[in-house]
Image (cartoon, rainbow, N blue to C red; front, side, top):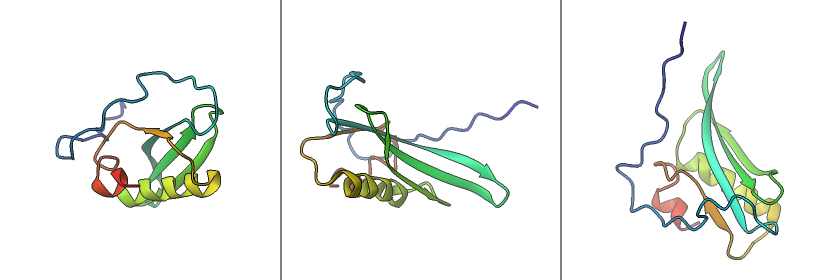
Length: 111
């Protein structure tokens, strides 16, 4: 049986999208210059769990993550908080995402 396609990104009703500062340059020369993030969902016996992940493009290491039963801005904020806690207060890092509703909320833009 084929799985049904599920749309997980909806940025139609969010704030003005940020400009693309990364410009598809996925190779960086130093750590903490560019981080990328996305969310996904995982089927479990108890229902859906959502996972937000932050990667440093330089090392390709997961530097922040969060799991929860809701795909919301708190999930993304928790992953970003972990990344900042693990890396310290970095200056001028680009955080790149698909700008779905969880990433385009006002609480995330001021992070």
